[in-house]
Image 1 (tube, rainbow, N blue to C red):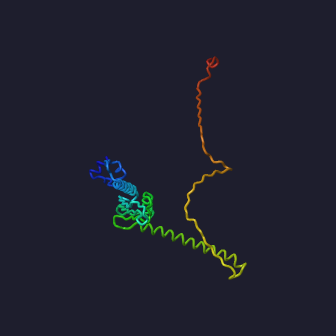
Image 2: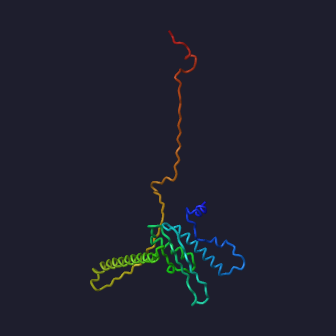
Image 3: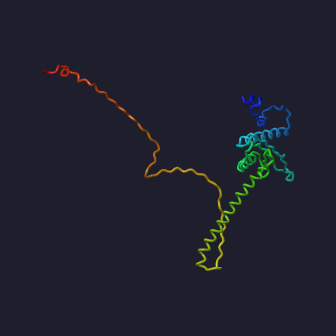
Length: 227
């Protein structure tokens, strides 16, 4: 149904060819160069499909430059990649999304450095520079925080030593190593004084009885009343 809609022009068909290109029979005598080219085209298509699934991305194209490996150090060239993303009208990518695209491509190609990946949009805007600037901005903020921490700790040490040793009789210097890694943890605790209820089961039982308005059957109840 999707193919029929695409042929009718209702939806756009996926122009990126993925690893299904490897399933096509090329016949005997296929050269090693052609096999490498087919694999590269398939990888480019798979990456483009994955990038196209991101929010605000209408389509994508990936071009990989994977040089042939050489035993000579002078001829040893590193791979590179360029990514063209087509965004929906009025939409843009966050720097974190651009970094995600760069990391996705870098981890898909052996020996591909993130610095060798270029990401642009359909207007020719270089998005990879914005992502790099975002990383540099974060690194600058972390550096400034470390310097402020060192200054604060140095001042505290001076406040402790100055009354004891006097002025100009000591030197205090603090070098702070701050761990900025983020860790997410989940903990589950129970109160020993008031045990938590792990499971509960309730049973409701109802009983009903009906009584007759007549007398109790028997000989006395069936006798007529006295005069």
